Amino acid sequence: MTATTTGGARRRRSNDVMAAAEKDSHPAGVDDSSCSDDSSDEKQSLSQAAAARHSLSLQSIATSLLPWLGLSVWPCMLALPIFLNSQKFHYSTTFPRGWWTHRGEHWLDKSLEEGGIWEYGTELYGKTLRHPLGLSLGISAVAVGHFFLLIYFRLHQQQYLGKTTSIQSRGAVQYVYSDALKNHLSQPGGFLLLGLYLAITWVFDLLPHSYYSFSGGIQYKQVAMCLICQDFVQFVMHKVEHVAHPKMYRISHKPHHKFTNPKLFDAFDGSVPDTAIMILLPLFVTAHVVRDCNVWTYMAFGSSYANWLTLIHSEVAFPWEGMFRKFGLGTSADHHVHHKFFKYNFGHLFMWFDMLTGTYRSPNAVWGKEFNVGV
Image (cartoon, rainbow, N blue to C red):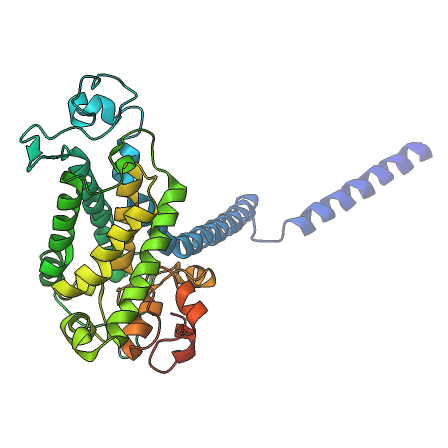
C-alpha cells in the first residue's frame, strides 16, 4: 500500500514538472500559429534581402560592363569581308564567277581567282579595266563598318551605355546630330574624293597584282602592316604641311584646324589638297610598299583606317582609350592635343612616331587644365 502511494506521488510530481515546462514554452496569450507566422515573416524578409543584394550585384556588374560593349565596333569594321568569306555566304556562291576571275581562255580555272575584266568596256586607250566587284565591295565594307560605328557612337554620346566625359574641359561642342551627319557624309574633301581615288586606282589596274586576288580570307598581319605604313607616311606628310611653308599650310591643312575642339563628324572636314596630300598619297604609297595583300585584306585595311580616323576626332572619350594609350595607339584625347596645341601629336593611329621624334604630348599633361581628368 505504501509503495503504491509513493509511486503515484512520483508520477504526479513528474506530470506537474512537464506541465510547468510546457507552460513556460508557451507564454500566455501566444499560440503556436503566431510563432509560425513570425518565423515565416523572418524567412521572407531574409529571402527578399538576399534577392535585393543579388539584383544589386548583377546591376553593378552590368553597369561596369555596359560601356565596354563599344569594343564590338572594332570587329564590326570587318563585318563584310568576314561575312563574304563565311561558308554559308561565300563570295564564290554569291557572285557570278566571271565577276571575280579573269575572262581569258583559262577563266574557269579556279586557281586564277583574280579581278575579272569589266564587261561594260574591256579596254580604254589600250588599258584593261578591272571588274568593279572588288571596288564596290571595298567601298561597301567601309560603309558597313561606318554604319556600326555611327550606331555605337550615338548610343555612347547619349550615355545609353554609361556616363561619358568630354575630352576638353570647356565641354563638347554642341550641334544638331542630323545636320552634322549630313555634312560629314557629303564632304567633297572626304568620302567623295576618297571614293574617286579608289575607283580610278582599282578600275585602271594601278594597284599591285595581288590586290585583285579574291583567294584566301583577311590577312591580319598585312592589315596591321598597312595601317602602320599608312600612318607613318601620313605622319610625315602631316608634319610637312605644318612646317614646310606657311602658304602650303594655309591652302591645305589650315581649314581642318579651324576645329580646336573637334567632334567626330569633323574627321574628313578639310580641303581637297589636304585630303590628297595627307590621305590619298599615303594610301598609294602603302599599296606599293605592302604589295602582298589580297582584296579582303585591302577591304579590312580601308575600313579599319577610315573608321579609326573618324573615332579619334570624337568629342567624348571612349572606354578603351586608357588601354590604347599604354600601347601607343591613337585615341581621341591624343588627337585633341594636336587640334588644341598644333605642334604635338602629328600621328593619327599610332603615337610611336611622335614618341620617337619628341613631338608626343600625353593628354595627362593637361588634365585638370584644358582637358578633363581621366580622358
